Image (tube, one colour):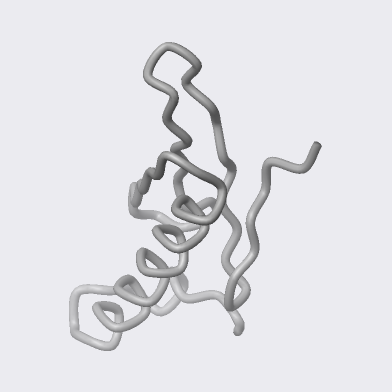
Length: 72
């Protein structure tokens, strides 16, 4: 079983909470704590992609350091 997602050069580790029946994850290898969740594999992957897209969009502003951005 692979619990790592990849998108645009960003990685996320996914965990399953059996009690809440919820998949959650966070984007790895960046200075910010960005998390996401979903109730199915498709939903958690879509949430991860949205989180990456929002992060990349926000990093185009002034608050993001260049070393936060990964190649994609």
